[in-house]
Image (cartoon, rainbow, N blue to C red; front, side, top):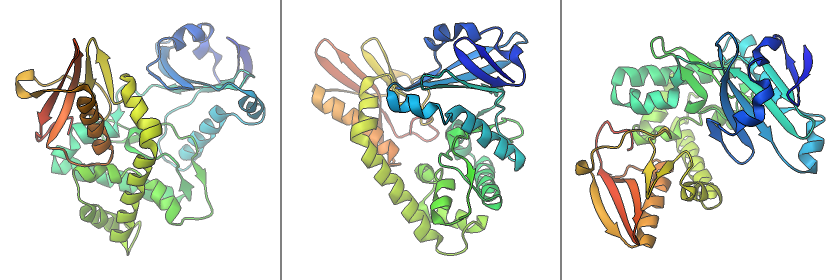
Length: 338
């Protein structure tokens, strides 16, 4: 079904999901759960109380406007989701998508209220428990095997794009944009399907990751060289993005890495969410010149992205009355922050 509502042209089966919120989109966009330069995601419910996430993407300029007349990113993501479902791979439900004729696209997905991200589950639980760790790794290797069996490629396959049922550990994929069938199943496609491996180096050595890859059957020989190359590529990507993207994000003080409250900036967890800070009596407080404090703060995030274990992890950056203090956590097993 195709209909016009709230300034958008919608494609959907059940128009009732729009009734409670589609005419208030500009208001809802002002209170997103996530936002970047071109994309906002807000949460809403329909009149039956079912939860949804709505992704709105708007790019200004002539090129996006012209491109949107022939291609919809929202429609493409829906098609990727349907492809996964046709292959028997669980994926979030996408009941509606639309466009506004000015370069904007809109996509509605059903909220997975019981599930948590596989990234959070790894850093909060699995990495500290051998049985959970084994199950988590098996799950991700099995997903990669399923993709290979169906000749699928995924350009953004990482742990934050997989949701887990906390009890059954059944996975559901989200954000499937770009998933497609490919005639080639070479190393480039395999590297994309194993992009979740390099971040695990905080807890598993490259040798352990290579052993697991060999046992998965995805690659029978040369696993050590493959994993080493995969990790070096990930490091080069971090370094390439650092100055122009990641560093400015962190300095903004309101990125996925941290947030500001008053005169303090607080580090987020390894899965990029706020969490309660340890008591300050457990932290090492250092008063430093502003330039040195900022460098220490930034270097800690760069080391985190490069999967380098830190014995001293800055959790709070305080700027107050011309003075700077860094409150650091000395390395602590089972911490959300290191």
